[in-house]
Amino acid sequence: MTERVKTAAEIASQRTRDELLAAGHRLLVEAPAATAFSHLTANRVATTAGRTTGAFFHQWPTIEDYLQDLLAYVMHPDRSVALRSTSAAIADELAAGLPFTAALIAACGDTIQTTTRDPQTIVELLAWVRSLHDEPFRIQFARLYPGLDADATEVFSALIQLLGREPREPFTVETIGAICTGIAQGLASREALTPGFYPPDLYAWLILSLAPLMTRAPEDTRSASAFVTDIGLESPTRPDSAGPDRA
Image (tube, rainbow, N blue to C red; front, side, top):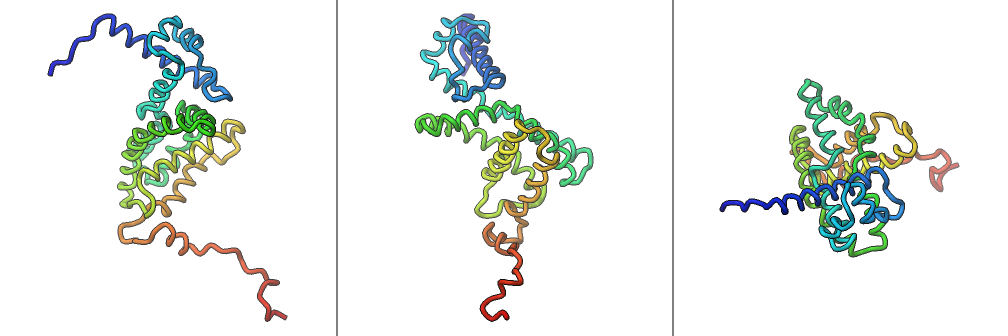
C-alpha cells in the first residue's frame, strides 16, 4: 500500500509539534521544578520553542494532554542517554581487548555522572513526586516502561550471554536491567548534590558484586535465596555470649 504524501500544512503542523515537544524536553532538563511538572506552562513551552500559545493549543487542547505526549517523547528508548552511553562504552572496551571485568569498570567510570544529566532520570524523579498523590497519573506513566524495559533487556541479555550465564531465579533479564538502572539513579541523586562523594568505580563494583546473585552458570541450579543462604554471612560470636553454660 502506497503511503499517502503529507500536505505542506501537515508537515508544518508536525514540525510545530516536534519543536514544542523538544522545548518541553529542554525545560525539564534545564529547570526541573520541585512541584512535579508545574513549570511546564503553555506560554513557557511555546516561548522556548519560538512559537505562540495559539500554536500550542492547536496541537493540544490542555497542558495535561501535552504532558502525556511529552512524557512519552522523553521516555522513548531512543532517548535513554545513560544506557546507550554505557553499553556503547562496554562494547568499545571489549573490542579493544580488555577482559569483561576490566571493560565494565572502564566503561562505567562516568555512568553516575551521565545518569545525573539523563532527562529520563529527571522525568522519573518528577513522576515519582506526582505519582505519590495521583494514582491515575502513576498508571499512565507506568505504561511507558515496557518499551524501556524491552530496550534494556536487549542490552543486558547480550552481556549475560557474553559471560555464559543466565538469570538466577527469581530474577529475569528485565528485572536485572531495572535493578542496574535503579542503582545508577540512586547513586546519581547523591552525586548531583555532593559531587565526588562516592569512589569513582563504585557503580561498576556494585554491578560486578551483584552479578553472581542475579545470574548463574548453567550447572548452578540454586535460586537467589539459596545462593544467599550458602554465603553464610553471620556476625561473629562474642566471647560473653557463649550461652548459659559459660563460667
